[in-house]
Length: 305
Image 1 (spheres, one colour):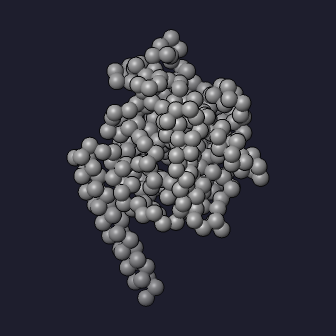
Image 2 (cartoon, one colour):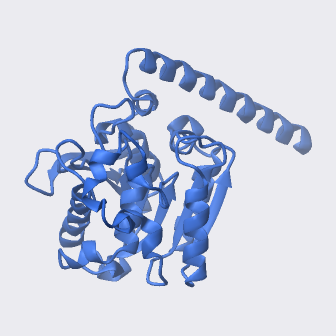
Image 3 (cartoon, helix red, strand yellow):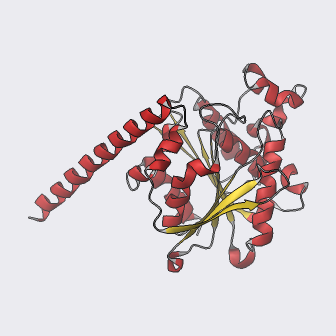
């Protein structure tokens, strides 16, 4: 009887998983047809239960420098560490996958459901700014959190999570000490980091639509390549990359993993059977409890307690 019940439960959740996936695909296709971000499509499936959100908190002088702060409704489950999620979008505006913090409510809900205060900042992108201004913006967002949310008090740390261009920004903040040094904070405020499908070992000058964004490093490309700053000073991290990624090769994560591990840094690498955007879509609510990406991230976060 117990075995039959187990088989029924497994079958039920398997079918639910397929059903949710199909619904997600249909909504995503509709959003693609109407030229909105597929991440916005996932966001449309998210309910508003289980969290509260403080919107449009300013951390800088530009209208683009705003953040939304998600908090668990159940304060009894509140974790000590704080999560900051940095979305991608090719460091520029006007593209299908360009980001807005409002499109990532499903990420705020996901981490809030697990007890984490979760911060999702907007930041300036090309053509408003070039590299490294968007990295400096997110550094200022970290400083705001440090100043206003008691980082380092009672061992509270900030966990940085980024996808694609956001993972590039996060990895530079984690690995290049200059960004934090310039604004007077120490990397000790960081408890760990998660990189999803990031370009850590690429040549931005070789990609036509990205080259104008990185013209400031035309004579020193290593300033824009996170792998150049690999050291044992980095906080613990995990790199997750789709083996079927055709936009940002998984070799980026492989090379950075080997460089950090070679320096003695505490780093994990998980290749998954996914494409570039699948690693992000796997954080959507229809996939809770099922996504390999989610399981790996929360296992990693638990190891930081």
